[in-house]
Image 1 (cartoon, one colour):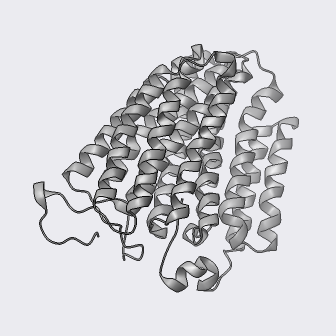
Image 2 (cartoon, one colour):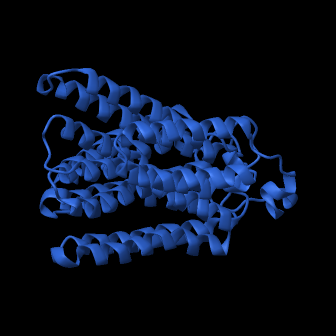
Length: 404
């Protein structure tokens, strides 16, 4: 926990940096509670993607990627701050609840962003989140210490970019994707600039546990969305056999994705500033593809119930493309450095074959069998052992950590 000088004024704990070597550091109940609101946001974005693709509008992918960036980035902002400065006193909790309220406002505006290109409500939700987040950074700066300037850079950078997002509301629709990309780059640049001055501390086991928990959330959304669609489709099919088969394949494939993700010891992969950026930012593709897998399954069910005009191959690609992205992303971020040659060939090969599966007569079945086969390979070939200095580099030697 934070070092304090005894009971503080107003029963507040001085917001000093957390010890990156703190034993038994795990996710708190507040962090788990915070993640719950993202279930709503992820489900809403995946549902809108499903409706857009099923209706024959592949351009729905663009607002999906935009909205999921905002979901992922809001979660990132809280998570990395919490691992460095989490105090869990009453003011910290209240600021967290304010951020949760902002996420709910943001989620309520996702349908409007998809259907009308109206980003006003999502931006308002972000303003609410940012008011609380900036207040947290200013509180960390006020506590003094060597990270004061870093905290002030975070507070000022986040505030400046958020003002630009308010202006984004008034950008003509045809220019919104390009402007969004520019502002997204500005967003992810703030931590890079702030950390150049002095790195904030983080706990490798805590931060990777947080990422793992969010991965479980998006995989759980795949199960929830898929099985809700199966329940709703029962009245529109003559036989339940195909739906039950899709249900079995969905459960099996999702379990395989879980196994593949958690095969590698993730805490090894955030030992330097560069690896932390790769791990933290690369998870956007893992989270977004896992949630899109849910939309793909629902599109597949729409085909079985004649609710879509998409062809057999098109609906199959709605499943295979997210799965291939998930496999490649997990491989690049966590599996590749911990695997032997066999695994490092098997995972990219599986991703490539998954992309070819829609050309086969039974793509969903073949994709699932391929994922199961990949799990078998991972079981036979456990992660390789690496010396401690290879895991954390100079960070392990001098007792410091850096992070995005």
